[in-house]
Figure 1: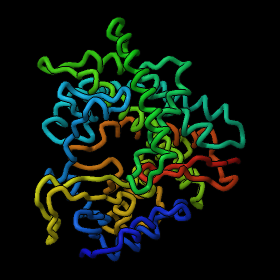
Figure 2: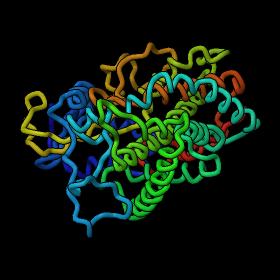
Figure 3: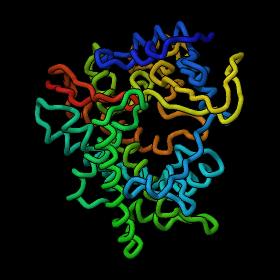
Length: 402
């Protein structure tokens, strides 16, 4: 079923007063219009089946990178030799996407991720023990743990990690759709991106001269049949890894702890030794996904069921709504830590499925397990506050105690 709606009705889904719990509004939207038409070339998808189709269908991709005149380029903006903006593989179509993702995957391997487990356990335990009896989960654990992990993975010097986290947070705020942004969010993001690119241009050059065992050294050296990452490709890949490897995992941990402390049995469903943490992570990803929406472009005239979608149309996918579609399982609006892992779109689908999903799952699993071991009686100790972002949903504060 599709319906044509006033765009303002769609924009209202993301009003600040709805931020603590947008899901009842998502549900009403999805039930009345799983595919909605906004104007001539904008579609909003909230049903699971339709969202899965768009994410998997090669007919839906991304606009081609634009060409910029030198006078129109921002400082430190990576462009290729023809003046085309260099984008991360997440925002590209095949064959460019295929080539870049293959190169990055050769450096960012499952083995590299698994080798991080002992260090993540050590960091999580230290952070929780240092927190005391009453603490803010976001400040004490959810924010520092992922930034420490991604910084160690990339080989960022210890003294630079606080700045590293600040850049990530500023850039993440600019990921929201244009209609949700303002100069107050865009300008700091642009400055942060410029600083980040400049910083990593110098650090990458150091790794070329003196390679180490970190991911940055691996990305600098990676090759496939003579193909390598250009400097611009390396820099936009690092930007993607920073935001995906830091902000989303921070939100996954925070959203998960909030769901647990609001649950009648608190952290008990994790198990006394955190043995159920992996299953709980999957339920958090479904119930309160760190990634709430994404977008695709129709690369040609195509269709969604019986609905015609003209070439160039923008398709916005409400991941947060689709993840609570009844097709995901019984009682989809309830947080059920004992639920068997099922379908969700938190990491996407198809060729753009999140390359960092194993690392995010590992960090969240360890964080939940260490909380179960060290703070089993954790309870909410105040009113949580949410970040003013929509695409990436997460908390700014989460006070707890025992």
